[in-house]
Image (cartoon, rainbow, N blue to C red):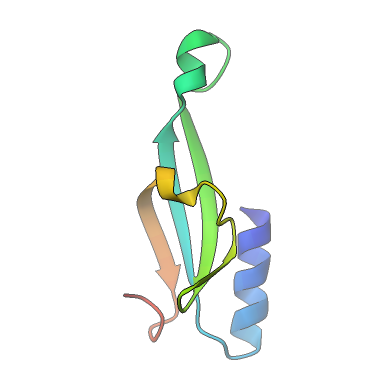
Length: 74
């Protein structure tokens, strides 16, 4: 999350629109390990078609929130 947020602020400061996504997924490993959380959270940042941060594994997360510049949100 900190990396995606920092990149969002940097792009915004330079006038480049982007969208910050927050997602969650069930942690299948958590079922086997009692001290593991049942859910995982992930953040990624998209600028147009390019995922700037957090691309790896983002497809397995369900989007629960997105924060974008008015011209970037789809």
